[in-house]
Length: 421
Image (tube, rainbow, N blue to C red; front, side, top):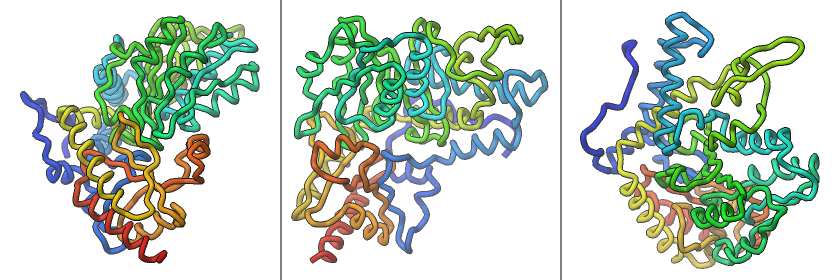
């Protein structure tokens, strides 16, 4: 490794989507678990990392490690350039109007908390105001608003879902009133795979001059996101679900709204002047980025975006849809297995239960065969309550998964059934 920045080479045409070659880009997929080849189907929790992401992060620590923005020396300028290049990559990836609209945070959870806290400080809410969410939200899009409600006496209004795991859109429209101050909804459900009709949600909310926050933690990896076309006011996502590192995420916000919001945290790098009589704050995006950031995380996220941009997102979507359809057909052959979440418009997430077998037992047993799935309530307890289940088992698919791995999952679940008679 030399001291030149590692970049994915520019290509005149998109890279051909060949799964076996893609798998070779991810070193962890070559390992064994419990003496069996790893079958990693927990991508909705976190995706694996391609070698180029790992290399870029090692490169930073090996050749550029320094604090950013405040240093005039060579290493600081290199690190600052790499970090801000990553911000530009995010801006272009989601088609924001300006890099000023890209705030680096720890993840989607911190981004939502930032909005809740900053709006609260800004006096945006008053007693009696309402925020609309859905019944399928991740806890990260419920709890911050509940904490805010304790300070401001605001109310959460919930869009109900049907037995397929789809929102009942007519009920959403009925919930809107002159008390509604924000609509905050998940773009794609991590527990059900449901892709919500976000364009229609934004359109209806904006008709009433209500801002919209979209939790894109799951959607960002499956779809090409264009925030200008969506016209949402905020969009949040985490890097670790986009083949990037943990501890880094993005809050996109329309500049005029972010400018109207007070800082989330105070400290270095977010100020212009400080004296004991008071302080003034820096411009966007730095106003919301107090202290030393996760520099290597930002660089890793930029490398992950470079990696994904080698491919056509239509090819990615087609591959993942084929896996979802194949897995759905295979698993429905298992007696007693019930799929939870059967929306017409769905991402590559498959949650299920098997009659008389606890999901934790399912996950534990197939792990002995090297198969990694997620079991539990998936931080969506209200969703589990609606379907009257304590938990589900969940398989979620990514660009490097194959039909052969689905077959191994199917075989593993048959062994679970056999063990329980």
